[in-house]
Amino acid sequence: MHPNLHKILGGSGFGLLSFGLLGTWYLFPKIIDSQIHANIDLKEGTMGYDTWKKQPFPLKFKIYFFNVTNAAAVQQGAKPILRERGPYVYDQYRERVDVKLEEEKDAFRYVLKKYYYFNKNESGCYDQEDIVTIVNAALVGTALQVQQMLPTAMSMVNEAVPYLYPGAKDIFMTAKVRDILFDGILIHCTDPAVDFICGAMKGTLPKTIQVAPNGKDFIFSMFRHLNGTDDGPWEMERGMTKNSSRGEVLSFENQEILDIWEEGSTCNMINGSDSTVFEIPKKIPAERVYSFSQDFCRSLYIQYEKETEEFGMRALKYSNTAGPLNYDSGEMRCFCPFFEDEDGEEQQVCPMNGLADVTPCMKAPVLLSFPHFYLGDPKLLDYVTGLNPQKDIHEIYAHLEPTTATPLSGKKRVQLNIEVKPIDEFDLLENVTRGIFPIIWLDEGVVLPPDFVNILTSNFLKIKMVNAMKIVLIISGLGLATAGGILALKKERLLCFANSDTADITTIKGKDSHSAKSDGPEGTVNPAFEGNMALNPPGLNKSLNNNQRQGVRGNAQQWNAQVWHSGEANGN
Image (tube, rainbow, N blue to C red):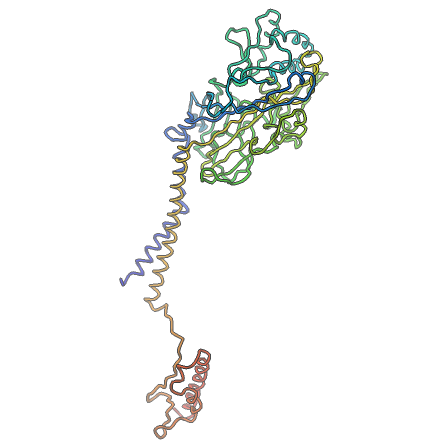
């Protein structure tokens, strides 16, 4: 054995242990942090930036129609019977253009573009050429707004309906899916009889109605205004400095604070991300995750629900609650619009729980809800037949990987509704029953494609290897240091173990020893030890058990004391 083996083992163990502990507190966290940020940092040259700037895979934009099966009866006041049709699936690609870095804010300024392409394979048996019947939101919306803003003009609008919507016999439109969603339905303004009405409309057009190429007519569609058009500008933090948060929206359309909702209220604040990039939470799990929806001029949040697993990776599930569309507590009441009553006084009017009135944002009387009125007031379900709210297919959720805040999968789901109510001065609404009428619901979702999952899992495998190395170094260091210490103790005879299984009493001979032999005649025994010697006849030791051996030791001690005292008495 090497004479300095204990030093070699101890030194090596101490070195490994020190390196392991140093790595735990400083080195390994730096390596892991560097590995994470190399992929997710929003700076040119990283995968995170390239993916953010031009999305390489599509989001799935699914649309479900509430097809009205008894339109004629509803026109006379019957309860609507709806049949859900869909999904009609579109691939949504996103690209951020005119990107500029504002270094003093650590933020990007950009314009967002979205492009939609019909996905026939994933739509299955549904096709853009399908004919559906839904509420004519443009017609009903016009009537509601005129009644609210200028009720004296209602008779004029009523007379204009046959010119604006030739052949209209009820409050519904029956048309192709492609026309309702993107291609558009013509609102006719060529007849001189409607010049005044159409001229007035141009100043208050909602997002869903655009001026036709001829400059005179209008085109109504649900999403034409979103396809390939500029959205923004946006201003979003990169999260590269201590004072900025990754993905946090600072402003939209040059507004840091909106002017849509109650003046001076928190409802006008822009909170959260654009739902594609999220800040890595300092506390895991974060209680809420906010995102800003520019289409509805407000921020919404989803709340932590549970820990789960996606693609074999740990994930945190966040989902929607009734809170953002509940007005009982008062926190959300600043989202309730103000309307003038009959006396010209402004009154704040909140919708039923489960609804969001986005009229001030969309310039049209649109009511948002979760699909099938999920989490809404149960009374909302009484107006129509054909709804069945279910958490697993109607909730909003996101599965976030906690280390990088990468969305592994998620769904944004919302339903568009309009209030239908009888208006005496408007012929097509004269006999209807009042209620909240569903039009369509949307499911915008993402699931990471396999290539990106492989990149993510590969990075986490590297992180696991680094963590495993840290543990191996600490355990190896402790083991080697312990082995070196034991060898050092043995070498210095500080660690010695005696065998206590046997106990022999041996007579010590010598001139000065207190022997069992007396100074008398040879062969005689000191009388003081006759009894004690008899306790240990030859061969007895091997046959004794432990208890008996202990007894012998006790007698031996008495015997030794007697010898000592006997010697003193004899003057020795």
